[in-house]
Length: 508
Image (cartoon, rainbow, N blue to C red; front, side, top):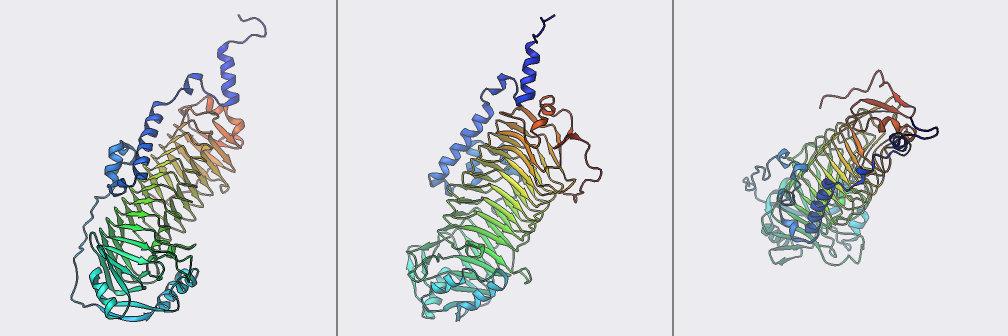
């Protein structure tokens, strides 16, 4: 029997666990799996910032550093999707001079007039654009048509420098072929607006020249609008885009949802270097596959009002002032799979505002200036099998949503809560199962989190604390069940029964 006032060491240690949320001291040893993952990601990051690797296919880069077990490229559709790059039809190009303000006005009917003034000012008083009404136009064709219509353009090594706006109408196609280079002159106010089709296979589109003396903010861009379509593969986009809205963000799809479309949106295996954003708006079933986004000047990829989008196997690297992937404004049933988001500010993947039934899986979000993955005002999201590591804020955050599920994720060494649930509607149930939490600032935190179902989550190496926020006083329930063998539903008042009528999601 211990002497009065003495307690066995086991009980003292258990008291520390319950009070501080700490596991046994041996768990504090470095985790070999995390060390190995970090080395592999850092090697990929170094290669991408070296420049040459921007031209290597993503699947090869990821395989070389040994991260395919996370991103699962076998779940992507085959690269090099079949597409007829040679179809011409029998229609000769039909062109005319046209006031560019007509095209801008049509775009403004759907996306507002913001930044239009900068585009107009950049023209220096000449409002004429080359308007292509019909036919398939290649880059050599474009140069001849400009000359024939008394527009200025320069031949450059491998391509053409465009010095005037070009409008591609519904029955026309602009086709750029391998190794061609289309340069858009910034001081001359050049840009391209597409109401028909644009096909880019292995070509480069870039902005060149100093800022316009008439409009210092203007930077050339390519915008697909109306019912236009884009099929892009193995292309490079450099230094494009300006302004505060997606329509002029570099390469943008700004469709009018009320118009019939000329084809699909498919953007594959291309490089977006120093653009503001790739933006996709009002485009059902768009595919963004295997691309690289490097040193972007805005949110790297924006998808809004676009249901059934597939964002697969893309790599985001270098400097970026804000989110890597934004899925916004009712972009339901999106699939965000196998992407790598390395560095950059703010949250890596942000899903917002009724973008319901989204699937976020097998992504790597590493060393962001913000958090990893966030769902806000979104229902029935499934976040699974992701690696979220070394980010400066939260790992995975659910805010103001019903029916969201977070399962089988690895959430390591983030500087805030690994899992965070907040601002939930009354009675909302959030499900979190089989996640592994290691070394985050805290494991699970809530602020108006309502009901959080926990099962199979591994807290055994979670330091310095298990629970935080309104759950912080209930640490003992995790300390006694650190690998989640027993299902528990947590509320701010402690364990509880799940709500009797949970929100029912459609079948995935």
